[in-house]
Image (cartoon, rainbow, N blue to C red; front, side, top):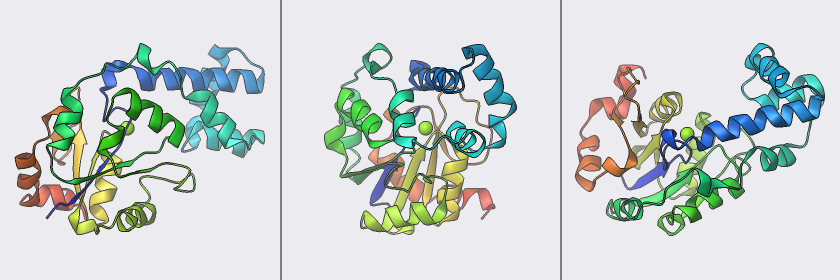
Length: 224
Ligand SMILES: [Mg+2]
């Protein structure tokens, strides 16, 4: 039985069409431009050419340019003016509470950004705990050991846990760890085998119950 649900934040608890995550990307290019003393256009090109060899822009900056202040980086690239992007929706807290499960956040963003978004959307009270990137030693999803540690710390087991996330790779990894998974795919462009929803607003208690009987939801389409 699914007793614990873990939610990603960005492009999951708010829609991709809000463009908040796009703004983070813009801020990252501005940060790179200022750190390397190049134009923003040049920074974008460098991120594409060199940065793409690394998991994150931060990893590239620290690997090739000696940058080491991850807290300053995280602080700089996460916008404060989230109200310019996000819309409050009273259906969101209602939907989450109606699920009747223990809810947690599992995000690769820092806690400051997580709290800013959750408080603005008025859903901070819906979650028992936020597992953020700092707590997860800047490794985070899709690392299976990290995710399993989070699940156990939340008092659950993989077999009783569900991850709701817009990144299919994170969802698949969570399933391979033994959990249930659900991809949030606003544009309908995900073509893989994992169960999907267009928005977290579609989540219902019955919908979660039906995942429990779904082989696909548990085993990632047999790719385990
Ligand atoms: Mg996300």
